[in-house]
Amino acid sequence: MERTASADWQGGLKDGRGQISTASGVLAGTQYSFGTRFAEGKGTNPEELIAAAHAGCFSMALSGQLAEAGLIAERIHTTAAVTLEKTEAGFAITTVHLAVNAKVPGADREVFAKAAGAAKAGCPVSRLLNARITMEAILES
Figure 1 (cartoon, rainbow, N blue to C red):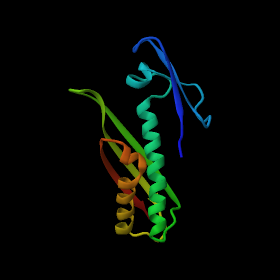
Figure 2 (cartoon, rainbow, N blue to C red; figure 1 turned 90 degrees about the vertical axis):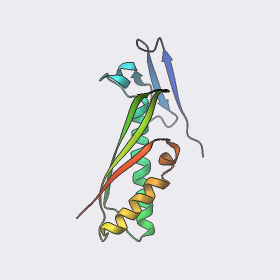
Figure 3 (spheres, helix red, strand yellow; figure 1 turned 135 degrees about the vertical axis):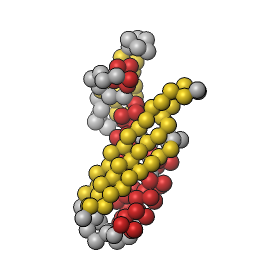
Figure 4 (cartoon, rainbow, N blue to C red; figure 1 turned 180 degrees about the vertical axis):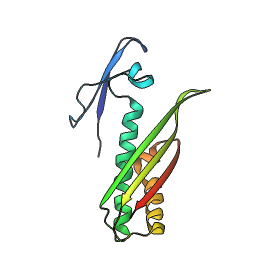
């Protein structure tokens, strides 16, 4: 399986602008720029897209781990916070924090925590990133 996306950029780093598109068409000419990455400009940025990918991947992985324990989630809500920092080697994504709230009928905290930990470790996006990934997982009653 292979998925593709493309980016077009015009101009310099700070005054230029670009567009990101995905083969599925979900993103089509979506604007990104220096301002959307380092300030509050209108559009997206690579870190936001990585956060969306990680949140989505983790939620699916958690659903799979819960299914292996015989549980079906009523709802899983994951927010991924990606931190971009300037390091000695240049800018790098240094951490990702996953904040997870899930409603899983019949789950106890121990089973949920085990499933969440396995999902965090096994999610393909988690495995791709070379960053410290932390998590807070809350099982709602």
